[in-house]
Image 1 (tube, rainbow, N blue to C red):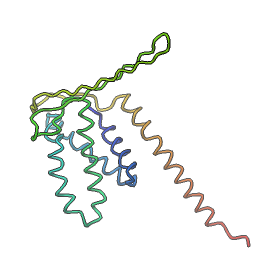
Image 2: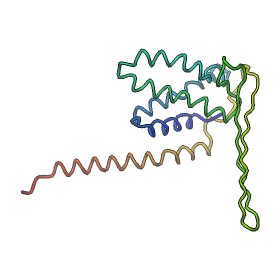
Image 3: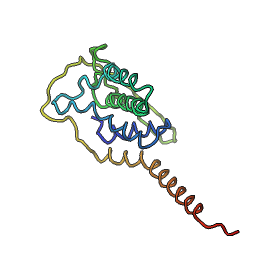
Image 4: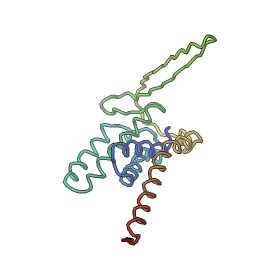
Length: 186
């Protein structure tokens, strides 16, 4: 399971990279964890992880909000929601195309790098796409930890450029305000 922090941070970074203002990107990114609410019903990676179903819910909402200011939230929220099952594809079987496809998909990747004695570098990437029949079965507990040390450090690394940029922008705004409020010496 991709942990909740990464389900929030990755769409946040993607949305801000697309030009969405940080506050709107943050709100939209919080919505990205909605598919994992199925875990409260002891069924993880259920219909809530299906892109066709996500679009079936969000397209009417986008249509209804198209001529309002809410559109500035509904489109980023839809993008954030779609990132959720895409990330889970790499964590385990995910019914990303259910009900169109009765198979859950799992993508595993691996890159083996070998450096020989004569400093030749060999790179051997492997990508496997596996499918299993989609079944929605109840579980007794969550299938993975909520937060891991790797997820926490990845979150910090991903957010560092945004935090630095925010600090720079605030410092610039403060300096501009200071300069603007200084009396004119002429």
